[in-house]
Image (cartoon, rainbow, N blue to C red; front, side, top):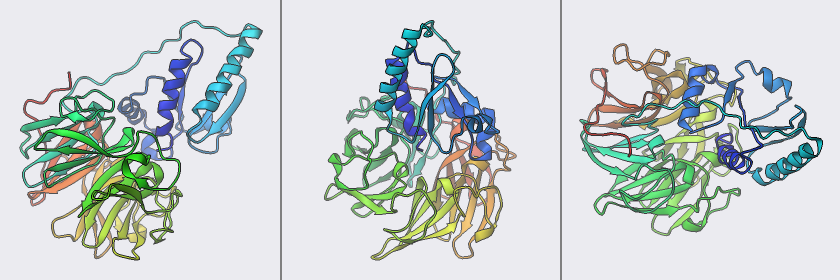
Length: 447
């Protein structure tokens, strides 16, 4: 997530210094799935990255430059000398100043070339959905975050399109459905004629009125929060909200970029941290003392909020009552991951992105994204088992194969899956286990 946050800064620098600066991304993977070139290519396309990216699968470049953490940015002058480096996010101004100084020094030495450096750029073919991130289902409707199309698609359970929320143009704007703009929306939840949306890269929470067909902003300023303080919702910066789930007048928010769970009080208009101290580590305890690791998906049970804690490949449970505590159901640490079913401490998953509770409240469905699987977690026994997928990325219904599933929803005896890298919504009959791919009648890409 911290690496995602530097993409806008890099884009600004590329634009400002378009004649002098060449940006090359070096992808030094943490997870095994991230070492595969095709998976990196999908990520580059998903995030709209225009500069070239090298697959540093064996971390050779990482070691050669003495890198110690993600993200690290190295500035190299025209003679190949490292001028300086910086780690972390929020360093745009420092980088811009240093780049100006480096340009001036190179001009004095006569080493700067402004000859254009052009790179071919891959693009995904036009499709009805583009990297859908999350899904939400009610008794008669299906809501899909068409993430890289910057819009929400509303359909019935058969795929008949009922509405589109957002113009499909990346940006920020409230107003009528056709005019509203989002930027890489993720989690969403509908109730009482309202749809709440985690507008991730706008760092805002949005609300769509399904009857009036209008969108308004409930929280966030468009800037990233750099403190852990709450306040009036429309005056408080947020940090990459990734999922939302309501509980009465409260909206729980998976604040992925802040490594916390926040609440938005819909009645009072106040946004504030609720669980997690903001450190990126695996720590249980009271809600104030516990720590999360890029929480990316939420599911609400009886007195418990379940959290997909992506960077520890784990599932956390947070008691919602007074004095509630955080406990780990699955997960062993930031660098403990794999693909192993079993009970509690035996289990290993890889970058889980969402959870969905079955109607009986006895088990969780888990989007084990980098293992290309959906798994189940029995909440009584603690047993995790593979439900769909064999670990091979693919788009087949038989055998059932997925490609980095990111979102789950249960309704009407079926499990709906946002199969992100397949640009599809897949549907499983929970009684038979049969998988199919949902066809959206009349849906095309945004104009």
